[in-house]
Length: 181
Image 1 (cartoon, rainbow, N blue to C red):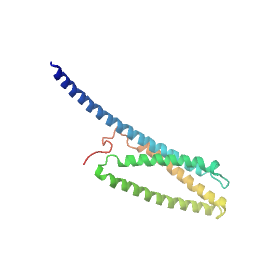
Image 2 (cartoon, rainbow, N blue to C red):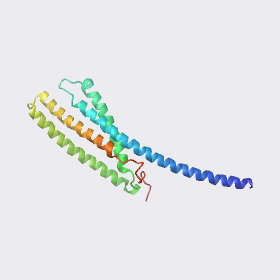
Image 3 (tube, rainbow, N blue to C red):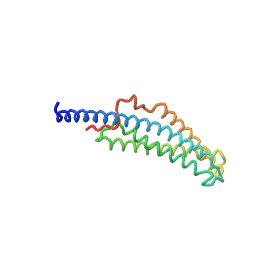
Image 4 (cartoon, one colour):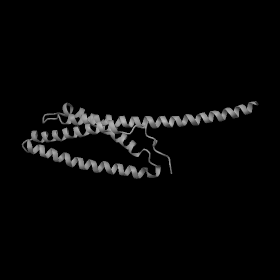
């Protein structure tokens, strides 16, 4: 076989192997992205629950360092992990033409959910404050403590649900964000 034919043949083989390797890398990226997003969501919710539980232990004499700093760090890292994972999973499998619409709906849902949740937790805090004696500082702290306890329980329940029901990309045939028209 002439040398030029060998080079041409080996070039085609290398190109086919390159394409196959690229496809395998894309599948691996999808798998890792899905697993990391699911893990990040559950872990972020767990950190958020720990942060809320820490906030519920504040008292009238707490200082920034002794009572507020650690729960703030835990909750902030947890919320950040959840936001990224939630956005990643919420927009995967969407065509580029629909990505803006889906992203807007996701953000609007977050805003509505946050507003409704804040209203419910404020109601819980006010009711617990009134039950604790009204307007004294210790009563107000008890009211907020109760709201943070409820938040911690809700976020912990969400972490369990996320760990149990987040779709596994190894069994999901949809793939990551499509490049379709």
